[in-house]
Image 1 (cartoon, rainbow, N blue to C red):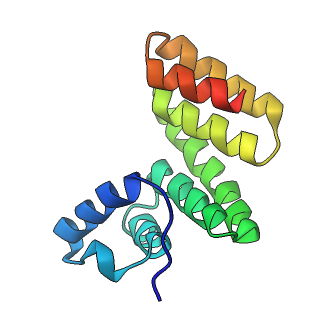
Image 2 (image 1 turned 180 degrees about the horizontal axis):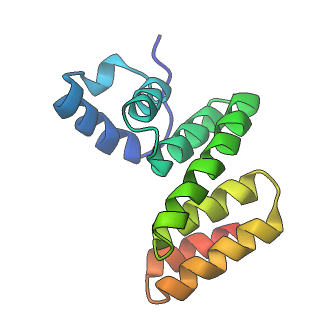
Amino acid sequence: GVQTCALPICLELGAFLAAGAFVTFWMFSPVELFERAIALRPEDYQAGGFLGMALTSLGRKDEATAVIRKQVWVIEQHLELHPGDSRACIFAATAYATLGDADRSGFYAKNAMTVDPDDPILGATVAKIA
């Protein structure tokens, strides 16, 4: 059967893949959709983060940790090219927090808030991981 998770972004990604790859969201689990997204665009730091969250929500912690470890490399590569990307900084902060690296998490959370201090969603996310 299809496993589900409580990630609103699953619907957005599902719609994207449905339009771009002629698949229907309901035919695939969120894990399969995120894996397909990574296969299509391995440089996209977001899909790895969402895959890690989906795996975690399904109780697949070891797999999630492995995905998140790969994701931080992708995020850091992205941030070398786009250091002002506050969303990427938050993904990095969240990934490092999940891996238990409070120093790196704090570094990226601070960078995100420096880039976009007035973003209320960003502030709420930083407060959750701090």
